[in-house]
Image 1: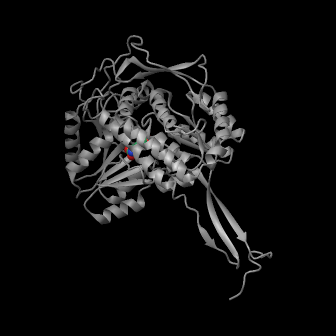
Image 2 (image 1 turned 30 degrees about the vertical axis):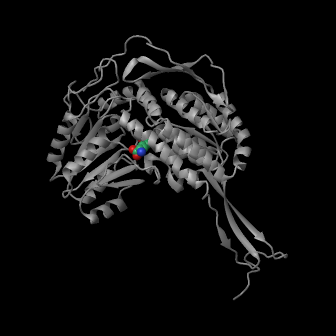
Image 3 (image 1 turned 60 degrees about the vertical axis):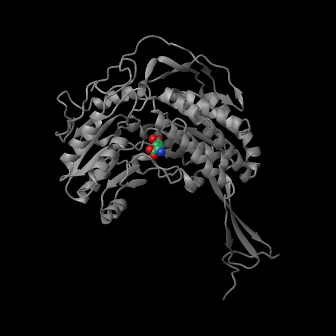
Length: 520
Ligand code: UN1
């Protein structure tokens, strides 16, 4: 199960040097840079990225602040038109943008097209929302008085995103934030900088004014320092973060000190329960897609399949067979999954593989987990010597106490556990303490609703995989998966607007609430 790749050679071709954009201007490259490479051919450079510092992030927040008054005053339906124009540009450049995604983060091209489609869907949804940014009229307890509510932008939204969905997930923040009248400072993942640059170009070409979207390429420590300074200076209205639970909890603590509630979309250890009456081939297909699709690098990827004891052996046999038959390799081809995104993901997955002992059992208290699919080399379409490729791994018999059962893995490994009663299945599903996406394969509606009620998950799929949420349903998690915030659809409007209430007395006299209420 060890990867066959090796780092070798220097850069084959340097295509561009990317610099941050603040207030519509490129800032000069400083001394520090990051080299973003093609994970399918690590010797090929996609972009050299000039890294900005903490002060640049603060400057970007100031530029965003300066642009915000004018953007806020653009009528929401007109902001909606700008979002619609962005959506049209995304559609028109779909293949080109998907190719950048495939090249820079190794996502299979078909999935990359889906990711780009997710941006277009998001734009389509929020373009219409510009004409529906409703407030309410509310009756007053006194005559000749009217109560009203208004949605107001929060100000500057600072968005920090990971590179596994290098354009779709940022669009879930950026598009509704802009539609609501906010301006944005976006800190994309350095290893997905070319994707970020391509997305920025589309936003700029959609006619969205300078300073409304600012892009800062920075590493983690500088971002953290810059965010702290910007929060201290009162420049930030909202922080949106998609990434690991560890970093998310640090951002949450920092925001909390400044009385801010960030929108946090963190990790997952997403369970799939397969009941005794389930359509087993369908469940296996779902497990293959959500466990190994995107090389397991979605926050919604399958963590553990929790299978009824009567179906367990057959489920493992079928999943093992399917994983062995799948093609892993060059993401520009028709493959189940390509390389891991970047060296740091490969390093992280190496640590996960370390949870599996040399005897192919998992470390931990269950002591029973055994690797089934450990397909050596065969089936690789890419060049395993030069790409961050790993084989699909299935570990049968994981349980509480095993690292592999408890923690997010962000790589192509699926654990399988078995259960007797639905109570046991729910307990296993909830045990790791995440709460993003859960799925149940069953033909029994009673089990569906019992599971839905008791599983801690922001999203539940029935006879469908844990990954692959549609772009207009609330997206987010509980527990270690987030702070309960939800993205997407109308629900995200509460992240990027604040309610203002108005009471308007036109009686010509002072009517005191609670005291001057007329009697019936
Ligand atoms: C993520 O991995 O951060 O539901 C988001 C899905 C995708 C989004 C995943 N639409 O799997």
